[in-house]
Structure formats: C-alpha cells, structure tokens
Length: 282
Image (cartoon, rainbow, N blue to C red):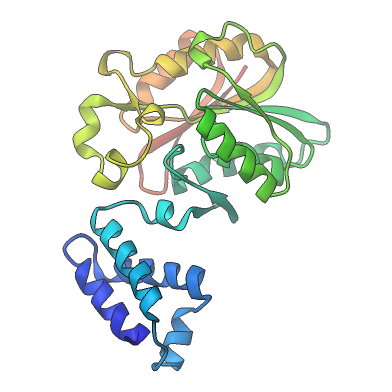
C-alpha cells in the first residue's frame, strides 16, 4: 500500500476521536520517527509504499490510538522547551503550561551572576529540573520524586540532554527538613481534585499516572502547604518559590502564601487564560 493511501485510511479510522488535522499530525510524527520521512517527502514521492512488516506496525499503532493511548507514550518521546524528553507510563507528559512556568524562572534568574541552587519537587520526567539546568548553567539543580520509575526516567533524560541533576527519592509529605538552603524551589505537584475527574480527557485519565495527578477533594492544597512550609526553612532570604497550580484554586493559593508570610506574591495565567502558576519570595 502506498504511504499516501495508508495516511488517508489512518486519518479516516481516527475521525471519530480526533479531527483530521490532529490525526494527520500523529501520522507524520510517527512517519518521521520510523522512516525519517516528512510531509513534503510524501507529497513529492507519491509512490512510496509501506512493506508488509511496516503495515503490521502501523496497524498496531492505529489500534492503540483508537484506544486513546497518548501519542507521546507511543513515540516514547516528547518535546519540552526545545529539548527532547523520554516519556512513559511512569511520568506525566509535559504540558505547554509548564513551559511557561519554566520560562518565568529562567527569565528571573538568567542574569544572576553568582551560583544558585534550585530544587524541583515532584520532578516526574525531569522536564523542569533538566530544562533549568540546561538554560541556567550557573545553577546547581536538585530534584525529588517519590516514584522510582519516574526517577529512572528523569535520570535518562538528564543524560540525553547532557546536564547533571542530583535526583533524590523522597516522599515530600514525610519530609520535615530539606537539609540545605536553596535559592529557588519549584513544584508542579498533584493538584487535580477527584471532583474534577469528569473534566479530564480519557487519554490522561486512563494512561497517565494518578499518583502525579490527583489529590483528595477535602485536602487539595496538601502538597502546596507542605512545600511552602519547607520553603520557609530551606529557601534563602530573598529566594523564590514557584508553583504550577489548579486553575480553580488561584485565590486559595494567594491566601495560603499570605498566611505563611511570603512576599511579592504573583498569580499568572497560562496561554489558555487559566490561573496556572504562582510565584513569591521568602
């Protein structure tokens, strides 16, 4: 079968779940990884064909996409802030909103002349910690996660992106002291309440790790409270604390940080207009 004909079938088979442009983008992402062929190559060489072996592979991919397994997990990689990261079922797929949080931290610290220490709590794939290590070469970066699988993935991502991050297996909710002082603490902790599950797409709800996503309805700020309390002891005077947050809890986050006497509290919206990140100083 020609690649062009299979592409048309591929898009049609996914039409009940994805619009045509998104389905076509999936097709070309996979094609470039598998055959190093781009959209223009298929246009210029309409007689290119898939072998029988390739058709078996593509039919399997098609079936998995129909089950709404995320394309990033099928590819095994995704892009974040211009870098490539391995992703798998142990880690959340990095989001564009998190890129905005990273950009905020980079812009605030890239002109700092002295060495700084940064801690990323709940690192997952390592996308925040690794990107900060890459973009802020004067930073010494540490990262914590409770998941062994996540930490193994993050370690591979650090090697892939040629940076050093000190990864630590630790349950932050059981931590009473971080053991050293940091200039910046950042966290994108679990923040989706169970009551919000109906808003979550199937590809996230069924395939991404719930450990990194959900918190109890009656204790939605548990991670933020704990991390902010640790920051009071373990961030230098004038240092910074950043969070990605639940879009519905922006005011509650401001109140929490005010009650804990943080300064210069700033709530920011993401590209979609939702309250998504908050920063403050100690």
